Image (cartoon, rainbow, N blue to C red):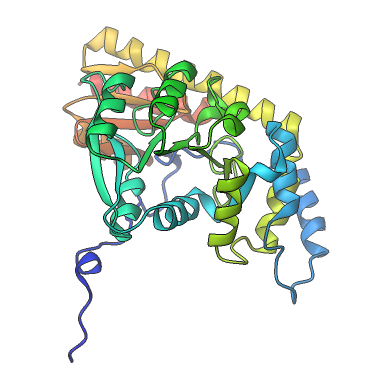
Length: 352
Protein backbone atom coordinates (compact mmCIF):
# COMPACT_ATOMS: atom_id res chain seq x y z
CA UNK A 1 0.00 0.00 0.00
CA UNK A 2 1.39 3.40 -0.96
CA UNK A 3 -0.78 5.77 1.09
CA UNK A 4 0.94 7.32 4.11
CA UNK A 5 -0.30 9.80 6.69
CA UNK A 6 1.29 13.22 6.47
CA UNK A 7 3.81 14.43 9.04
CA UNK A 8 1.38 16.46 11.13
CA UNK A 9 -0.91 13.45 11.63
CA UNK A 10 1.44 10.52 11.91
CA UNK A 11 2.47 11.12 15.52
CA UNK A 12 -0.87 12.39 16.83
CA UNK A 13 -2.48 10.46 19.66
CA UNK A 14 -6.14 10.79 20.72
CA UNK A 15 -7.05 12.90 23.74
CA UNK A 16 -6.92 10.59 26.75
CA UNK A 17 -9.12 11.66 29.69
CA UNK A 18 -9.59 9.54 32.78
CA UNK A 19 -12.00 6.72 31.95
CA UNK A 20 -13.90 4.26 34.08
CA UNK A 21 -16.23 4.72 37.02
CA UNK A 22 -15.22 6.69 40.10
CA UNK A 23 -17.58 7.63 42.89
CA UNK A 24 -16.32 11.23 42.89
CA UNK A 25 -15.09 13.09 39.81
CA UNK A 26 -12.93 16.10 40.65
CA UNK A 27 -10.73 15.91 37.56
CA UNK A 28 -12.41 17.82 34.71
CA UNK A 29 -13.48 21.19 36.21
CA UNK A 30 -17.13 20.35 35.56
CA UNK A 31 -19.96 21.78 37.64
CA UNK A 32 -20.92 19.61 40.60
CA UNK A 33 -24.60 20.32 39.82
CA UNK A 34 -26.60 18.01 37.60
CA UNK A 35 -29.90 19.43 36.37
CA UNK A 36 -32.89 19.07 38.66
CA UNK A 37 -35.83 16.89 37.65
CA UNK A 38 -37.93 20.00 37.00
CA UNK A 39 -35.31 21.44 34.63
CA UNK A 40 -35.00 18.09 32.86
CA UNK A 41 -38.77 18.03 32.45
CA UNK A 42 -38.67 21.56 31.03
CA UNK A 43 -36.02 20.49 28.53
CA UNK A 44 -37.99 17.35 27.69
CA UNK A 45 -41.06 19.40 26.82
CA UNK A 46 -38.98 21.69 24.61
CA UNK A 47 -37.29 18.77 22.84
CA UNK A 48 -40.68 17.14 22.19
CA UNK A 49 -41.56 20.12 19.98
CA UNK A 50 -38.50 19.80 17.72
CA UNK A 51 -38.97 19.03 14.03
CA UNK A 52 -36.31 16.34 13.84
CA UNK A 53 -36.53 16.13 10.05
CA UNK A 54 -35.31 19.72 9.69
CA UNK A 55 -31.82 21.12 9.81
CA UNK A 56 -30.92 23.27 12.83
CA UNK A 57 -30.83 27.05 12.85
CA UNK A 58 -27.40 27.74 11.38
CA UNK A 59 -26.87 30.87 13.52
CA UNK A 60 -28.28 29.36 16.73
CA UNK A 61 -30.39 32.46 17.24
CA UNK A 62 -32.33 31.26 20.31
CA UNK A 63 -29.31 30.28 22.46
CA UNK A 64 -27.43 33.34 21.21
CA UNK A 65 -30.31 35.54 22.37
CA UNK A 66 -30.37 33.78 25.75
CA UNK A 67 -26.61 34.26 26.11
CA UNK A 68 -27.00 37.90 25.14
CA UNK A 69 -29.59 38.47 27.85
CA UNK A 70 -27.63 36.56 30.49
CA UNK A 71 -24.34 38.40 29.91
CA UNK A 72 -25.72 41.70 28.59
CA UNK A 73 -23.84 41.48 25.28
CA UNK A 74 -25.43 42.47 21.94
CA UNK A 75 -26.46 39.47 19.83
CA UNK A 76 -24.59 40.78 16.78
CA UNK A 77 -21.30 40.26 18.66
CA UNK A 78 -21.93 36.56 19.41
CA UNK A 79 -21.17 33.37 17.47
CA UNK A 80 -22.14 29.89 18.65
CA UNK A 81 -19.86 26.89 18.43
CA UNK A 82 -19.89 23.17 19.19
CA UNK A 83 -17.99 23.74 22.41
CA UNK A 84 -15.15 26.22 22.77
CA UNK A 85 -12.87 23.63 21.18
CA UNK A 86 -14.59 23.96 17.82
CA UNK A 87 -14.34 27.74 18.02
CA UNK A 88 -10.62 27.55 18.85
CA UNK A 89 -10.17 25.27 15.84
CA UNK A 90 -12.09 27.60 13.53
CA UNK A 91 -10.28 30.71 14.76
CA UNK A 92 -6.78 29.25 14.58
CA UNK A 93 -7.48 27.58 11.25
CA UNK A 94 -9.11 30.56 9.52
CA UNK A 95 -7.76 33.76 11.07
CA UNK A 96 -4.14 32.66 10.55
CA UNK A 97 -2.27 31.28 7.58
CA UNK A 98 0.37 28.58 7.44
CA UNK A 99 3.63 30.04 8.73
CA UNK A 100 2.00 32.80 10.78
CA UNK A 101 3.05 32.94 14.43
CA UNK A 102 0.65 32.65 17.31
CA UNK A 103 1.80 33.02 20.92
CA UNK A 104 0.48 30.88 23.75
CA UNK A 105 1.63 30.77 27.37
CA UNK A 106 2.83 28.01 29.66
CA UNK A 107 1.13 26.65 31.63
CA UNK A 108 -2.23 26.88 29.86
CA UNK A 109 -4.88 24.85 27.99
CA UNK A 110 -3.08 22.34 25.77
CA UNK A 111 -5.58 22.51 22.89
CA UNK A 112 -4.47 26.03 21.94
CA UNK A 113 -1.16 24.68 20.67
CA UNK A 114 -2.70 21.46 19.33
CA UNK A 115 -5.05 23.17 16.88
CA UNK A 116 -2.47 25.75 15.81
CA UNK A 117 0.02 23.04 14.91
CA UNK A 118 -2.66 21.06 13.11
CA UNK A 119 -3.21 24.06 10.83
CA UNK A 120 0.56 24.56 10.38
CA UNK A 121 0.59 27.80 12.33
CA UNK A 122 3.88 28.52 14.06
CA UNK A 123 3.58 28.46 17.87
CA UNK A 124 5.83 30.39 20.24
CA UNK A 125 5.36 29.79 23.94
CA UNK A 126 5.81 32.50 26.54
CA UNK A 127 7.01 31.10 29.86
CA UNK A 128 5.21 32.46 32.90
CA UNK A 129 7.02 33.64 36.00
CA UNK A 130 8.13 31.09 38.61
CA UNK A 131 4.95 31.79 40.59
CA UNK A 132 2.86 30.99 37.45
CA UNK A 133 1.79 34.62 36.93
CA UNK A 134 2.00 36.61 33.69
CA UNK A 135 4.08 39.76 33.48
CA UNK A 136 2.11 41.87 30.96
CA UNK A 137 5.13 43.87 29.80
CA UNK A 138 7.20 40.74 29.20
CA UNK A 139 4.35 39.07 27.33
CA UNK A 140 3.88 42.14 25.13
CA UNK A 141 7.60 42.23 24.36
CA UNK A 142 7.62 38.49 23.60
CA UNK A 143 4.76 38.86 21.12
CA UNK A 144 6.44 41.77 19.36
CA UNK A 145 9.84 40.04 19.22
CA UNK A 146 8.24 37.03 17.55
CA UNK A 147 6.08 38.99 15.13
CA UNK A 148 2.93 37.39 16.53
CA UNK A 149 -0.24 37.59 14.47
CA UNK A 150 -2.17 36.16 17.40
CA UNK A 151 -2.04 35.67 21.16
CA UNK A 152 -4.21 33.15 22.99
CA UNK A 153 -4.52 32.53 26.73
CA UNK A 154 -7.12 31.67 29.33
CA UNK A 155 -8.10 34.14 32.03
CA UNK A 156 -8.55 32.91 34.69
CA UNK A 157 -6.10 30.23 33.72
CA UNK A 158 -6.56 26.50 33.45
CA UNK A 159 -4.61 24.80 35.01
CA UNK A 160 -3.00 27.38 37.33
CA UNK A 161 -6.30 28.76 38.75
CA UNK A 162 -4.78 32.27 38.67
CA UNK A 163 -6.09 35.36 36.89
CA UNK A 164 -4.81 38.54 35.30
CA UNK A 165 -6.69 41.68 36.29
CA UNK A 166 -8.77 43.59 33.74
CA UNK A 167 -6.38 46.55 33.49
CA UNK A 168 -3.43 44.28 32.68
CA UNK A 169 -5.35 42.45 29.96
CA UNK A 170 -6.42 45.77 28.44
CA UNK A 171 -2.81 46.88 28.44
CA UNK A 172 -1.84 43.77 26.47
CA UNK A 173 -4.64 44.22 23.92
CA UNK A 174 -3.89 47.90 23.37
CA UNK A 175 -0.14 47.32 23.03
CA UNK A 176 -0.55 44.58 20.40
CA UNK A 177 -2.16 46.54 17.59
CA UNK A 178 -2.56 44.27 14.57
CA UNK A 179 -2.34 41.12 16.70
CA UNK A 180 -5.56 39.19 17.40
CA UNK A 181 -5.87 38.61 21.15
CA UNK A 182 -7.97 35.51 21.85
CA UNK A 183 -9.06 35.65 25.47
CA UNK A 184 -10.61 32.48 26.84
CA UNK A 185 -12.90 33.44 29.72
CA UNK A 186 -14.15 29.89 30.38
CA UNK A 187 -13.70 30.40 34.14
CA UNK A 188 -14.57 34.09 34.39
CA UNK A 189 -18.02 33.29 35.84
CA UNK A 190 -16.13 32.57 39.07
CA UNK A 191 -14.28 35.92 39.03
CA UNK A 192 -15.08 39.59 38.32
CA UNK A 193 -12.51 40.74 35.76
CA UNK A 194 -14.33 40.02 32.49
CA UNK A 195 -13.82 42.13 29.37
CA UNK A 196 -17.14 41.18 27.78
CA UNK A 197 -18.48 44.71 28.27
CA UNK A 198 -15.51 46.13 26.33
CA UNK A 199 -15.45 43.74 23.41
CA UNK A 200 -16.70 46.27 20.84
CA UNK A 201 -14.06 48.81 21.88
CA UNK A 202 -11.24 46.81 20.29
CA UNK A 203 -10.74 45.62 16.74
CA UNK A 204 -8.30 42.88 17.86
CA UNK A 205 -10.15 41.23 20.77
CA UNK A 206 -12.02 37.93 20.66
CA UNK A 207 -13.45 36.38 23.85
CA UNK A 208 -14.42 32.74 24.29
CA UNK A 209 -17.09 31.48 26.70
CA UNK A 210 -18.21 27.94 27.47
CA UNK A 211 -21.31 26.22 28.81
CA UNK A 212 -19.22 23.43 30.35
CA UNK A 213 -18.16 25.06 33.63
CA UNK A 214 -20.45 27.38 35.64
CA UNK A 215 -23.39 26.70 33.31
CA UNK A 216 -23.08 22.97 34.02
CA UNK A 217 -23.72 21.66 30.49
CA UNK A 218 -20.48 19.82 29.73
CA UNK A 219 -22.47 16.99 28.16
CA UNK A 220 -24.08 19.28 25.59
CA UNK A 221 -20.95 20.79 23.94
CA UNK A 222 -21.77 24.44 23.40
CA UNK A 223 -19.60 27.54 23.44
CA UNK A 224 -19.66 31.15 22.28
CA UNK A 225 -17.21 33.57 20.67
CA UNK A 226 -17.76 37.27 21.37
CA UNK A 227 -16.11 39.96 19.27
CA UNK A 228 -16.83 43.07 17.20
CA UNK A 229 -19.06 42.80 14.13
CA UNK A 230 -16.20 42.28 11.66
CA UNK A 231 -14.71 39.33 13.53
CA UNK A 232 -18.13 37.89 14.37
CA UNK A 233 -19.23 37.98 10.73
CA UNK A 234 -16.01 36.22 9.73
CA UNK A 235 -16.54 33.43 12.27
CA UNK A 236 -20.15 32.95 11.19
CA UNK A 237 -18.99 32.70 7.57
CA UNK A 238 -16.11 30.31 8.30
CA UNK A 239 -17.88 27.82 10.56
CA UNK A 240 -19.86 24.82 9.34
CA UNK A 241 -23.44 25.78 8.45
CA UNK A 242 -25.13 23.52 11.01
CA UNK A 243 -22.49 23.16 13.69
CA UNK A 244 -24.93 23.31 16.64
CA UNK A 245 -27.63 20.66 16.48
CA UNK A 246 -31.21 21.55 17.40
CA UNK A 247 -31.27 19.40 20.53
CA UNK A 248 -28.21 21.18 21.93
CA UNK A 249 -29.61 24.59 20.97
CA UNK A 250 -32.86 23.77 22.74
CA UNK A 251 -31.18 22.63 25.94
CA UNK A 252 -28.82 25.62 26.09
CA UNK A 253 -31.63 28.09 25.44
CA UNK A 254 -33.70 26.64 28.27
CA UNK A 255 -30.85 26.64 30.81
CA UNK A 256 -29.39 30.05 29.95
CA UNK A 257 -32.80 31.54 30.65
CA UNK A 258 -32.64 30.23 34.24
CA UNK A 259 -30.74 33.23 35.58
CA UNK A 260 -31.59 32.72 39.26
CA UNK A 261 -30.68 29.02 39.13
CA UNK A 262 -27.35 29.72 37.42
CA UNK A 263 -26.48 32.48 39.89
CA UNK A 264 -27.22 30.22 42.87
CA UNK A 265 -25.13 27.36 41.45
CA UNK A 266 -22.22 29.72 40.71
CA UNK A 267 -22.28 31.18 44.21
CA UNK A 268 -22.24 27.72 45.82
CA UNK A 269 -19.35 26.61 43.59
CA UNK A 270 -17.36 29.71 44.53
CA UNK A 271 -18.03 29.09 48.21
CA UNK A 272 -17.07 25.41 47.93
CA UNK A 273 -13.87 26.29 46.09
CA UNK A 274 -12.82 28.75 48.78
CA UNK A 275 -13.50 26.16 51.45
CA UNK A 276 -11.55 23.52 49.52
CA UNK A 277 -8.57 25.87 49.34
CA UNK A 278 -8.79 26.56 53.07
CA UNK A 279 -9.04 22.86 53.94
CA UNK A 280 -6.06 21.89 51.77
CA UNK A 281 -4.07 24.78 53.26
CA UNK A 282 -4.95 23.59 56.79
CA UNK A 283 -3.63 20.12 55.99
CA UNK A 284 -0.43 21.65 54.71
CA UNK A 285 -0.03 23.75 57.86
CA UNK A 286 -0.45 20.59 59.90
CA UNK A 287 1.81 18.22 57.95
CA UNK A 288 3.96 20.48 55.70
CA UNK A 289 3.30 18.14 52.79
CA UNK A 290 3.02 20.51 49.79
CA UNK A 291 5.34 23.02 48.19
CA UNK A 292 2.55 25.49 47.35
CA UNK A 293 -1.23 25.78 47.21
CA UNK A 294 -2.41 28.43 44.76
CA UNK A 295 -5.32 30.60 45.88
CA UNK A 296 -7.84 30.27 43.02
CA UNK A 297 -10.27 32.53 41.23
CA UNK A 298 -11.72 29.51 39.40
CA UNK A 299 -13.66 26.39 40.44
CA UNK A 300 -10.55 24.33 41.15
CA UNK A 301 -7.40 24.35 43.28
CA UNK A 302 -3.86 23.70 42.04
CA UNK A 303 -1.36 22.12 44.42
CA UNK A 304 2.37 21.93 43.78
CA UNK A 305 3.84 18.70 45.15
CA UNK A 306 6.50 16.14 44.36
CA UNK A 307 3.98 13.49 45.39
CA UNK A 308 1.61 14.30 42.53
CA UNK A 309 1.74 10.76 41.10
CA UNK A 310 1.31 9.07 44.48
CA UNK A 311 -1.60 11.30 45.51
CA UNK A 312 -3.25 10.80 42.13
CA UNK A 313 -3.01 7.01 42.45
CA UNK A 314 -4.08 7.04 46.09
CA UNK A 315 -7.22 8.96 45.20
CA UNK A 316 -8.04 6.66 42.28
CA UNK A 317 -7.64 3.65 44.58
CA UNK A 318 -10.28 5.30 46.79
CA UNK A 319 -12.61 6.02 43.86
CA UNK A 320 -11.84 9.74 43.54
CA UNK A 321 -10.52 11.14 40.26
CA UNK A 322 -8.34 14.26 40.31
CA UNK A 323 -6.09 15.65 37.58
CA UNK A 324 -2.31 15.31 37.66
CA UNK A 325 0.40 17.28 35.89
CA UNK A 326 4.15 17.04 36.23
CA UNK A 327 4.69 18.41 39.74
CA UNK A 328 1.06 19.31 40.41
CA UNK A 329 -2.39 17.99 41.18
CA UNK A 330 -5.52 19.91 40.22
CA UNK A 331 -8.70 19.38 42.21
CA UNK A 332 -12.10 20.57 41.01
CA UNK A 333 -14.45 21.81 43.70
CA UNK A 334 -17.28 19.32 44.09
CA UNK A 335 -20.25 19.30 46.41
CA UNK A 336 -19.68 19.79 50.13
CA UNK A 337 -19.88 16.03 50.65
CA UNK A 338 -17.47 15.31 47.78
CA UNK A 339 -14.97 17.87 49.02
CA UNK A 340 -15.19 16.52 52.56
CA UNK A 341 -14.44 12.99 51.37
CA UNK A 342 -11.47 14.25 49.35
CA UNK A 343 -10.09 16.21 52.32
CA UNK A 344 -10.54 13.20 54.58
CA UNK A 345 -8.48 11.04 52.23
CA UNK A 346 -5.89 13.75 51.60
CA UNK A 347 -5.29 14.09 55.31
CA UNK A 348 -5.04 10.32 55.60
CA UNK A 349 -2.36 10.32 52.89
CA UNK A 350 -0.41 13.24 54.37
CA UNK A 351 -0.45 11.82 57.90
CA UNK A 352 1.27 8.59 56.88
